[in-house]
Structures are given as C-alpha cells and as structure tokens.
Amino acid sequence: MLIDKRTLPFVALMTLVVVSSNYLVQFPIQGTLFGINLADLLTYGAFTYPFAFLVTDLTNRQFGPSAARKVVAVGFAVAVVFSIFASTHRIAIASGTAYLVGQLLDITVFNRLRRLSWWKAPLIASLLGSAIDTIIFFSLAFAPVFAFIGPNDDFAIGWGTILGIFSTEAPRWISWAIGDFSVKLLCGIVLLLPYGAFISVVKPMPGQAAKA
Image (cartoon, helix red, strand yellow):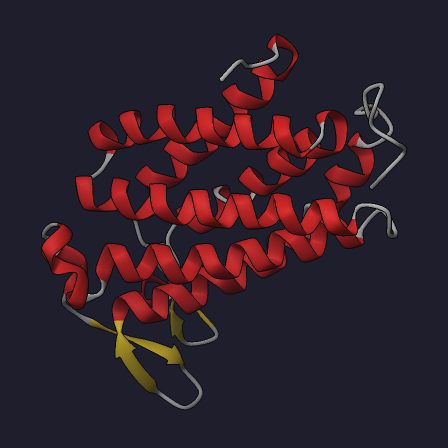
C-alpha cells in the first residue's frame, strides 16, 4: 500500500489523535455539573477523538476516498502499536476495532453525500461514524461479556448515573458511553467551523470534482 507523501501530515495528525484518545479515555473527568458527577459520564478521550473524523473528512475531500482509507489504515497500524504501550491491550483492541469500523463508515457516507451542501457530508458522516465507534469501543473495552479479551477490573466495577434528574443508574461504562457520544455529537457540530475554514485551503486535487 503506497502512501502519497502529500498525505503524510494527515497520517501524523491521525496517529496523534488516536494515541492521545486511547490514553485519555482511561481518565474520567472529575467534578460535578448541575448536580451530576462528571466522572460517571465523561473521560478526557471524548474531547480528542472527534478530531479523527475531521482529519478523515479533510483527507477525503482533497485526495478522495482511496487516499482517506490509506490514511486510516496507516494511522490505525501505528496507533495500535503505540496504544499497546500507552494503555491496556484490551483498550488497544477495542479502540482499533471501533476506529476502523467508524472511520470506514465515515468515508463511505461522506463520499455518498459530498455533492450536497458543504456541511452535510462531514456532519452526517462523523455522527454516524461516532455512533458505531462508541458502541463498539465501550462494549469491547468494558462489557463483562468481552472479558475474554483481557481484564479491565478498574472500569468493570462501579455504577454511574445516566440521568441525574431521574437518578437512573447503570454500569459505569454504559454511562460513559452515553456521555462520550453526547460529547461527540456536540463536537461534530462544533468541528464544522474548522472544516468550513479549511475547505478554502484544502482544495480537491486534479481528478476530484468540486465536492464537499
């Protein structure tokens, strides 16, 4: 698999985002908000990972889906190696699987919608990719049914509040997943701003029609 040297900055950014997220997902955010214990809902990784979709979409826009898949593949390979050292092997497996499925879905959806309004392709693609990524990652990383992948005792125990207003409780990893996707949903909207700013600079290469 040959990588166009022009996409190397995207590969580097993707690797940085995924490795950082794999490490930061192990650290719950401390404090309360409106009476809700944030440690039951969020980890720091929720705020860094959405940037992976921004990198993928910008690559897709400029170089097309084939180049975007190569960036995802290289970023995946390098990130998994680093993640093994930065986190547990179960986190690395869960992250790698979720990353590949979520990013490839993002590329497919973006490519199908890229001729629509500039904001629709990146927004819809990133939200769908984020949803499947969240489901796969938190299930593989923390659900007891996948304990055969490896131990994760520090996260398997404990209960968290999903909706503080109703005091509805669930295993902490489920409340984390809900909080994580909520942040990704918000970030997907906020990251339209830098995407919109970059599209005037990141022009489609020759052979790529004017698209999203």
